[in-house]
Length: 133
View 1 (cartoon, rainbow, N blue to C red):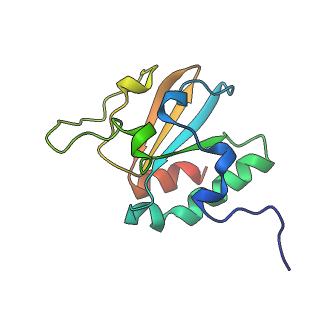
View 2: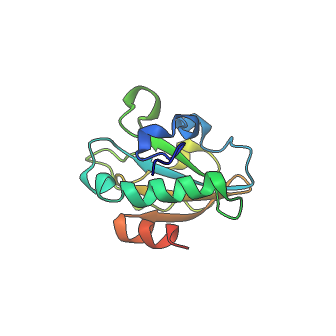
């Protein structure tokens, strides 16, 4: 049995990929931004779960929409990941612009509500637990 319209990888969600400058400009009152990289091994490990959640969110309005931000797009999305010599404490709750968002590295799931960061989930376990709701 073939499922039509089912998406199986991050790249299948082109419509839901955003750039860092679009992080706080989505029409939804509440949404997730999933920050990943195509070269991140942990991102690959949880790809199935994240994609499964994204498919559910597209079909069922009771799920919070999820948008994808690829750190591999260094031209448009650089500066979100802390530089090697930079202290990165992931303390950007309440941020309302991409310039205030700094992560240690992918994967990272950010929940935005009413134009501000309200939750940050970094790492495989925290992300999987949050999306299992």
